[in-house]
Length: 193
Ligand SMILES: [Fe+2]
Ligand SMILES: [Fe+2]
Image (tube, rainbow, N blue to C red; front, side, top):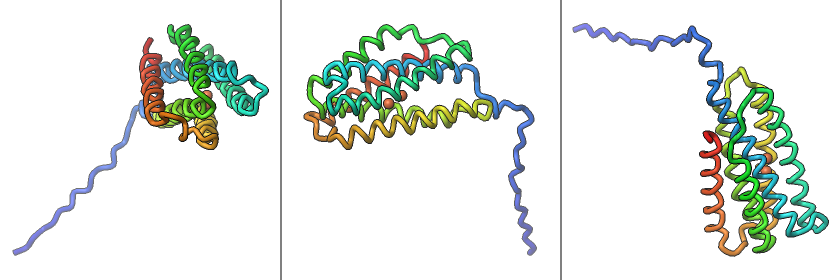
């Protein structure tokens, strides 16, 4: 008997439309809206911490370094929101108060607790930025670059928190879980509202 094996090679798919290379407008809007909100919240968290520690204390200076980078981030997103004509989240007044309260309350618990707050927030933001880099297509290469740079800054902030003994804060595990959950909720809401 003769057996004939026919190997069916999967045909290489070709995409005629340019759809694959163009970022969906709704995704772009959500990315810029939520990042603008998040960076604003970040500046308020560090404002809250600096209000407790003072900007001239040793830890205050470290926090000021991170706060200055957050200011660069929010300045950039302020530009992008205008450039792309994107409505900012309606919840900025809430993030103003909630961010400051989170920063100040963790700082009142002590230096390690403040750093634990940084670790939790920056971990979520770093991961969030990484997801966005993967969502953006070739039509937004500059934005991808910007977000990559900011992701690196956020991960540096995360590492600063670890270096300052965040993990030895009382109740570190519970506190970081609660803050992470809060950040993820804020992200989900700020994309839409
Ligand atoms: Fe930032
Ligand atoms: Fe940060």
